[in-house]
Length: 552
Image (tube, rainbow, N blue to C red; front, top):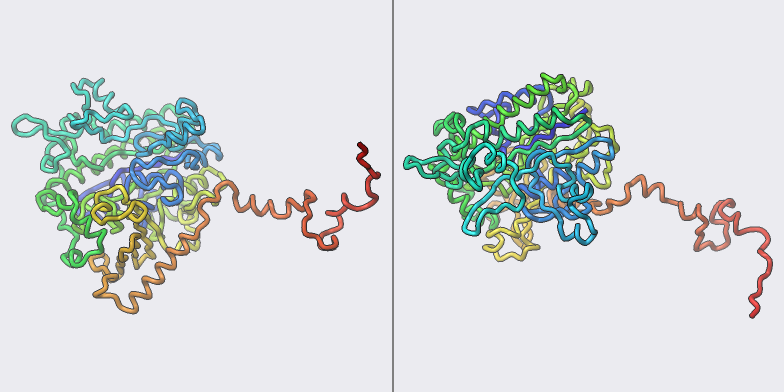
């Protein structure tokens, strides 16, 4: 049995036809949803690439593993999905992006070389690497940032694209009316076709690498297929560049009430560069059709993978998971990108096809359980037939839900965001340790707590599903609202008291330790010996050893 763990970068939960999008048809996503379960309330544990992915890969909350922002190294020794699966006899491979930065200092301190098997896995987030390419090969006044040589760029060079950095010059740029480069970094160019053959663009290239992997490798394996798209730059090759137009761009989900006395962090984000750009209707009219085209291309490439599985008769042996690391505001709530905890940012698509017969009863259904991204790692261990190390993995296996079992589930979903490295933290005058946010959501009420002495935010998604009206504003707080805030803070406090760092001993290990020292004859604090069974005192009873006198 194998696992295809497919992640799309910055894919919104509602930009799929199976999730109700009115214009974008995604028949291959829909096909997997019809084969499995689509989770309608799946939340990431951090709404930023690096922090979110490290939660997926470790099965742990962001404050447990510590790698909460892009470029924050995942500390050496942190248990990963690959570590857990290998103990269950399943290989774990990477095909694409991780956004992981190795703890080079920690590896050096421990003498771990990245050219060894152990060192390479530490440097690659626990994966064996089939191929890694994180995309975003930027080039500016300081030159071409190529810290890790891009295999995709090398592929384009081999195909004859004449550039040191064809990712930037061709795959993510078009040509304007004057014949000049029209870079995808500039939103006004989003309606132009990328200057690359469609089959040479990033998404088909990674799909080809995935199929090559499946042809060569025998199982059991877990393959993390991690696409860079539909993440910006928002530019896509023909024919996807003009499949959608202005008539497919929805009105932004935003309200002037959000700009009135906003919570300070929200207010700061509404004024940043990306938010200001997406507040422009002209930007949205250009970008959103390109974003939809990128998703359509992703769906078509998913079709290639499904076709391969069907042709090789391996679909029946392969779990498939489709998800994302976070969403994209696209101008909703006066914001662009991701970062905060509105549904558009922190909620993600999650579709799971479990090929086992036990899942037959739930095929084609949806589940509204509060699912967290960290639930996938224990689900995979469960699928691989291993024992879930629940003293390390903080998520819960989804198998009972996939198999239609009645099970008590979590009361709240938690997400965290460390924005200490951002201009917003500087603008608010916050020390790095205070630039942190926490979300607790119970399915109706969503609370955002902000460190640094800043007030919280609260939304009632039952009566305000669009999250326009912040009930934690002083002007609208009522005793009833205070009660809800206190209740959600109690959930957050309980979560904060979790046992997250005792990862070297399981609960079973500790239970087995109880009384072990007394069985070994370590018997302190006995008043007369009657406190313990006679057998424990056997060695210490009877005739004393012969007298011994130390004579000089």
